[in-house]
Image (cartoon, rainbow, N blue to C red; front, top):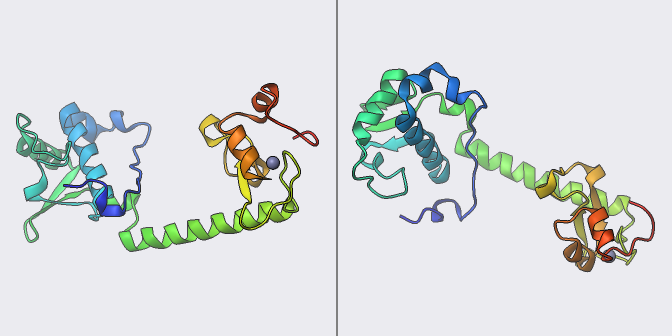
Length: 197
Ligand SMILES: [Zn+2]
């Protein structure tokens, strides 16, 4: 099974709350069942199954292959017993309990993705307008074709996408700066600032 084909290779995220290991249902399920449950949720997210897993697929949610030595059927019974999983006799599916309390239905998910993409496009234009279509680092004029928007503090370093952390940038400065902070970049001599940041 091609694990990336189902959603065009995009990665979707699985949410676990920070107290999950102390939830009574999880504690009663035990670690192997908890591991399978996490893999099952990831499977549902990857293939957009609405939290459903056909009975015939319970063996493949872990690593995408039939997990041989693991007694998956005992595990799913364990999860049903503690209330983390349900079984629909009519459809032959296992269903993650309360899946839609955490994850939107696929149609709503698509709508959210479109809205997020649209908001990012608008945010990007707002940053370029605010910075007068000039690179904040070297001052070169930007056009719609070559304008980049840079995270001053990179996302990988704890920065966010708040407009205060975004600046208009030329491709050359953006690539040169990479995942460095402005100060680190300046220390390396890569930043030709026209003013402070
Ligand atoms: Zn520049």
